[in-house]
Amino acid sequence: YGETEQKLKLIEQNSQKLQLEYEQKLTQIQNEYDKVNQNLLETQSKAIEFEQALNAVQADLKAAERKNTSIVKDLQNHLQKERVQRTISNSNISNTIKNISPSSSSSSLTTSPISPSSLTTSTSTSSTSS
Image 1 (cartoon, one colour):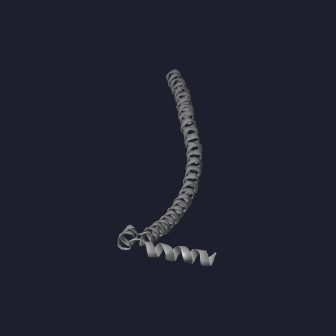
Image 2 (image 1 turned 135 degrees about the horizontal axis):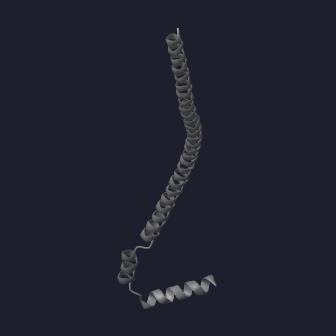
């Protein structure tokens, strides 16, 4: 009977020891789970922050793109106006140059010599008109 009691006490001690080891392992696993869960929550939080920052950057990019498009259109309009103005200016200069042709002025000077009779005529004409 004494031997059975000793075996039962030994079994009880082993059982308590195993129960203690089980509880320690369970606590260790629970602590690891809590750490992993905390890391997951932090990661999710950072992911949300990143997504918000990304959305803000995308909105800024869209706004910058709209602004750049507007600037490009303004510049194209300005360049078109300058081209039209330059064309008009060049056309005016060209017409002015055509109207003042040096060959016609020099030919009229060389081909019509002044005679004393033409001087008299022009003098009498001018005095008559006065």
